[in-house]
Image 1 (cartoon, rainbow, N blue to C red):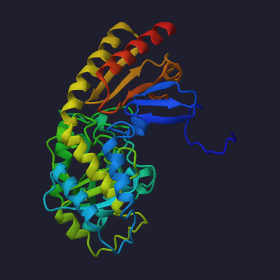
Image 2: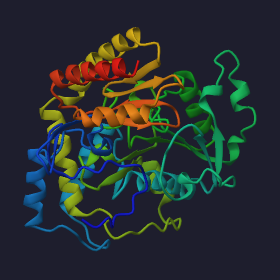
Image 3: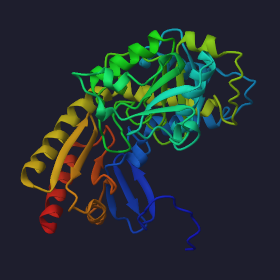
Image 4: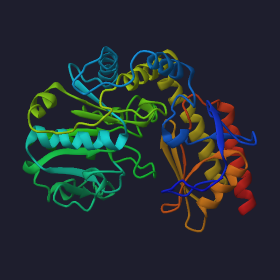
Length: 384
């Protein structure tokens, strides 16, 4: 077959033709167990029955509407989202990618406050596009390395920030460019307080950490903070391209009529709304938040046991069903990932930071966690 796809990242050549739950199958019917959940999107597993049925049902009704028109399906989905985020009487805008949702969070903050500065952690990802994806935009972004925070001397972290110019701080509470690093709880709380006291907003980027990935609905729930804006993607659609920015009524009223100017073709589409509600219903009926925490303990235990056996493993860290294994520089994580794929396991690899990453679907069979770790042990023994 002609190689006519432009790839922006390294890839394997196998043609995946079918996927169900944590299993994927190539054209030769070889089975793979997916510890990446697609690109961390399929929290319910591939081809979830409830989500598939919601899509099929909505296809026969209406899938897309003009932005001037309203639909009950998206309103129902907005109610569901506001309930799980804990934002009472708020508003939601549905979009199509997590990057766009984060960009919308920034735009909302700028419009609502009239300010043009945002605090972001330099060791986080945030977005593939726009202002949030461009760390070189010094006019808008105040970059701070959260690992430089000193609990005994917090002022050293805050002293150079003019909070009167800050529209928002945007937290990414766990992904850290795939490294699974978590900022200090006191830093998050203190930064939130200072931004809010100065009239700015707290934005939580939950594209990766949301929807049970960390053992709770959202990553911010580990930090005892209440965001003004919550940006969601990935797990919200279980593989369907939908995202959302949920905001308090205060933010919505402050931003309204301020020339926000974000109109795109699939904003608040009913098909996306149907998917969002189906995903939340599946989470709640199957009690997957609790399941994520329980299975996460198993994954953590098994990876920590592996660390005890191999000196090449530098660190194991994570929450819920989001874990990273960091190796010493002598290890070839890309090579390890490729070997594991040949053995039937898809595991993420970040060669820049020498990290293997594990983000399986929350519905994964516990036996497959044990099976993967055993095969990883065998692989490391081969290399040692």
